[in-house]
Length: 138
Image (tube, rainbow, N blue to C red; front, top):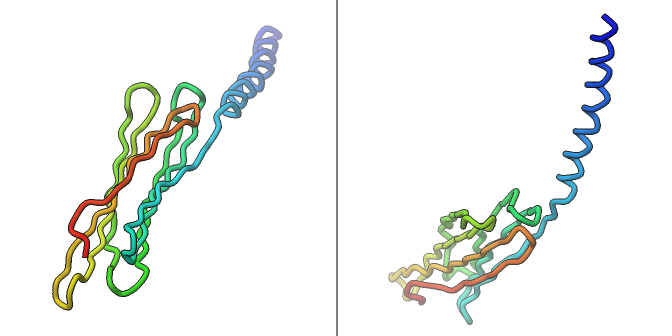
């Protein structure tokens, strides 16, 4: 009986230490946010691709992304965006988004403009951004 109580006491004493070690590892993870803003000269819209991620120095531990389009007048309307994210095998991730604006070029003609952004994030906080547009602009 005393051995059982002693064993339980040892387990109870080591559990908080193990939890504290896990908390320390989690505390080493740092988080960052970056954005790619796409504008098209005098065209009446803006596009924003925002990525937030956390990393522990060797691996990206969490990742969220959001694409937002804003039509600045009645010429264009925001249709939405497609988003993907892909691990690169070295602890980093590549995020991609492409938006869609339907823009009135003439009274009856509608053309689509597709702003896009690629953001590669690394577990140490580094990142690369590329962006642009495709489609026929009004």
